[in-house]
Image (cartoon, rainbow, N blue to C red; front, side, top):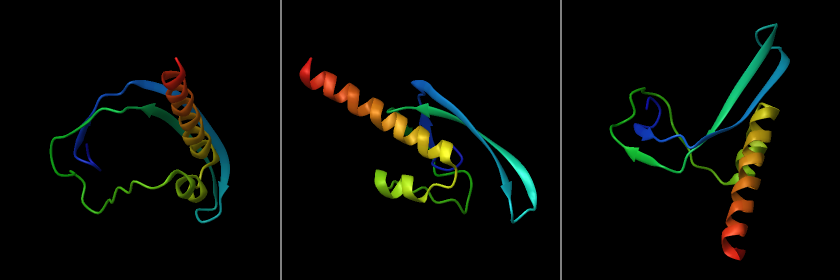
Amino acid sequence: MEEMGVKVVVKDCFACGERYFYHEASNRYSHAIGHFYFSDEFEKVSEPLEKGNEVLWRPYKETVTDMFHPHHVWAVKLIKERMEKESSARQHG
């Protein structure tokens, strides 16, 4: 809701991933955890609640190339493969 102003119906938590790494800018070790959800059901209910954020819908190749955390790249690739497999099954089934 904060970034996009939409109500989302979550269909699936399809992956969880994490990464331990040294963050040079803050001179400390960090533990990034990601829970990744799938939805294809969105409803615009308001303007974004947080100012200063910009949501960008980007092409797949550009997105995975620019992501910082490897477990985010892994999750995007995983859901893309799942969606392609489901699409193929619908076309041939």
